[in-house]
Image (cartoon, rainbow, N blue to C red; front, side, top):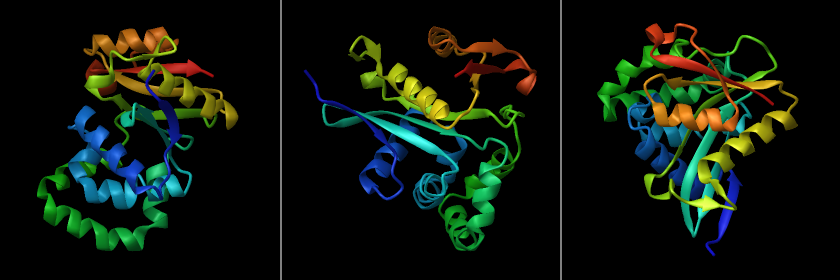
Length: 206
């Protein structure tokens, strides 16, 4: 039987951070953090925001390899603004290097700063930022559960532990596999008109 482990993401564990970034690049290559590049993710997004408690994440290890990841926040309305304010000095030095290494990242700035994903409006609702499982490990079952479900259940536990009432996220309305999976986890769906119906809001009462 393969050894498995669910790990809380530490902003001080470089092995975890490298794995988190690599999985993010593989599973969501068009996401805004990936467009900003590894330097941004390793020096600010997955380190400083986690260190400050503004976001939290998990990794799932299977047979000595990192197979999946999860990222979420208790502060959906302003976690990024808080992070920018707290680390403004560092970002002044970091972002020119980010843009020099990847000029295309400039195009992602407006998308990162505006609310296009339908962040929750009530204070007791958290937000599911992103998650993914490496394609090689998607068929794997651990105690009868797929790795994705283990990660989702851990996120539910996190929000319960912090006294939140619900968690919300978004899914592409054309992503049938994701919709089937979210339904199996107990999420409710609502079309709130995000991106002209291209995204659906999902919600789970924890």
